[in-house]
Amino acid sequence: MRFVIRTVVTAVGLWIAAWLVSGIRVTGSSTWADIGTLLLVAAIFGLVNATIKPVVQILGCLFYILTLGLFALVVNALLFLFVSWICDQLNLPFHVTGFWSAFWGAIIVGVVSWFINLVIPDPKE
Image 1 (tube, rainbow, N blue to C red):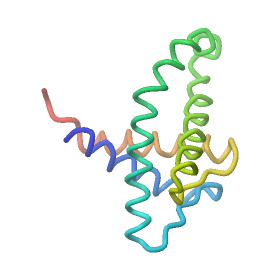
Image 2: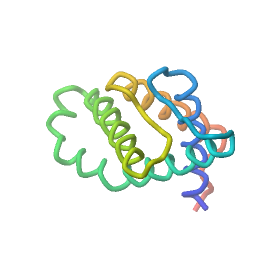
Image 3: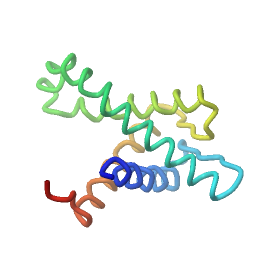
C-alpha cells in the first residue's frame, strides 16, 4: 500500500514537472493515457531510486562530502534522465530533453513529494 501511495505522489510530481518545465513531455493519446503513463513512469522512478541511487551514493560519497551534498542534485538529475531513457526503451510517451530539464524536473518532483508527504504522512508502523 505504501508503494502505491508513493507512486501516486511521484506521479503528481511528474505531472507538475511536465506542466512547468518545457523540456519534460508526456505525449499520450488521451488524458487517461497520460495518467497511466505518469503512474508507470513514477513506478519506474521509484524502482530506480530504490536500486541504483544507493549504489551511486556509496560510490560517490566523496563527491557528496566535497560539495556539501549539492552533488545529490546532479545525481537526481542524472537518474531522471535515466528514467527517461528507460521510458524510451519501453516506448512510453515520456521524454526529458537535456540535463537542465532533468535537473529542474527532479527538484520539482522532490519538492512536490516532500510537500504531499507533509500533508499526508506515512502511517505509523
